[in-house]
Length: 127
Image 1: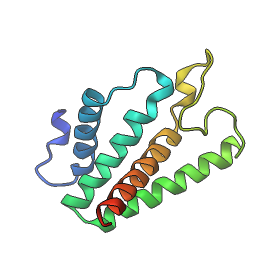
Image 2: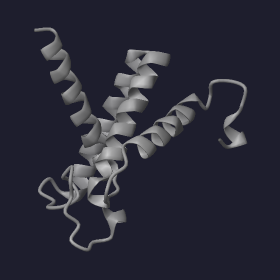
Image 3: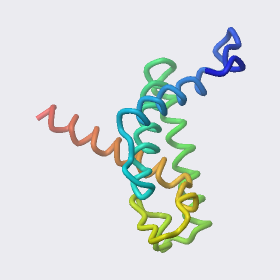
């Protein structure tokens, strides 16, 4: 961890949470190719927001999800709602530069998929 994050207060707590989530998902849930980047990006975002909810508050985690969703909608507006590649959760790059697909989309759509799965599982456990 960079010494610049060790400030002695909680001002860098979100950065530390994100780094821990990225390390865990990068090591435990590694995508096989760049078309599966949502696995790392979406699960990292999900784990980060769950940690924020546990450490700070559910409200702060929900605020992060709201801001992320707004960023996703902005990306849809910029790319166009019918963009054939970069708005899908699993883009087929067909030789395209993978960096073009690393936008807010895999982070937020992956996060939303994880929340959906969590809600389904929790719904089943309440039956």
